[in-house]
Length: 177
Image 1 (spheres, rainbow, N blue to C red):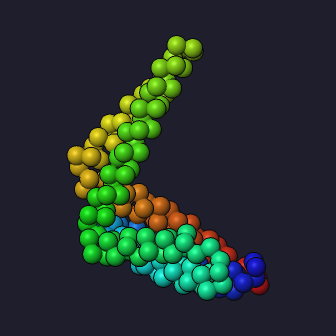
Image 2 (spheres, rainbow, N blue to C red):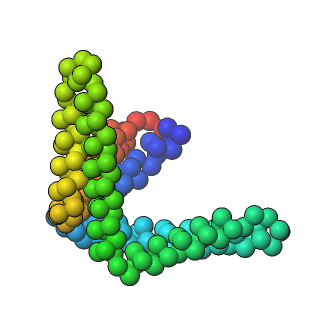
């Protein structure tokens, strides 16, 4: 495996450069990046739905349990179509799901923190819960900011990942095979 990586160091470098370019795109055009992510997810749902339907139909032809696969296939197709036709609405729905999650987990953290503060005097769990609830409220009222933030986080990840691959590629290129 190591010999393959050393012999093809340039592939790692290319992957690193592409990740860095993606990161730059995510930082400069975050809404475009988010829309592309939604469309890629829509394509995945559509293809996965087709394969699930095929598997369900094959199971049905052999008198097997096909309903779960058929339902999954139809739902994936519907989600894929929805995401293709209304990517903006899909993005906002995704951000709202994160907002709901943040508020619910924040409230639960606050409740756990209240129990903990009575026991040990520790209050940071309550603070974490308050931060989570506030984050959820901000996402509810400014979903566009949430979309931009998600794109930037993805861009930050891609930048670090790309740099790591690029550095690794140039470090191994002179190693003997």
